[in-house]
Length: 258
Image 1 (spheres, rainbow, N blue to C red):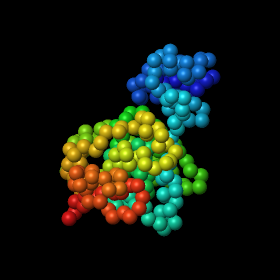
Image 2: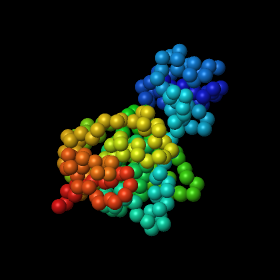
Image 3: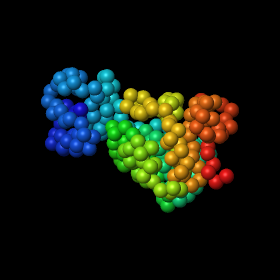
Image 4: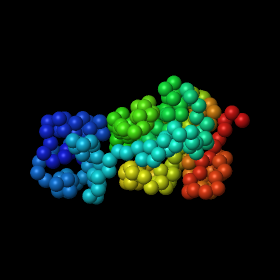
């Protein structure tokens, strides 16, 4: 369901109505009851709550808010002249057209957007409506006071709520430069703010071979996947692992230019 924080004014109630319409969820008018009481009365499993300090998801007594997570530290490292493993594996160039096929909250998409620059285009595809909506709102409004480049990169990410296989099937051959997959395991390895929301609300489906085949048709230059280091998914799906001697995650690459 969708509701508001306690003692909501008309602005918050209007915001809740818009969210309910967008997500096609029932709207529950909140008066003096707690969120748990209201959810129990409505038989709701979770709630999207419009509050003065921003919208959040509520599930089993916990609040889940948008946060860019590890993207802040990763971008700072890039700005200092360091390298990011994803950008190196994906070989992102200024002006590239990129699809992040498993957007989540967009931490990777922000780095891809920064590397592609103002002349590039990054589309983030997210299958779960609630996550897609929260990511879109966060990417549009979040401001980091110390890293203005992060906000610029976030604003350039276009969010599309769709199954990525359905999305690929609508695209012409070789119409983007790079396609990136980060299946659910990859998103839950890192300990980062916002990750818990993806564990609860994200799509845990494994990456399908037919989605990889469509990605190979659509991408001009490269398809990249993040997985557990040493995962058999690389060989099973046709990716060449990028050598990595430490850490829990690894990238696999299909170089379509070869």
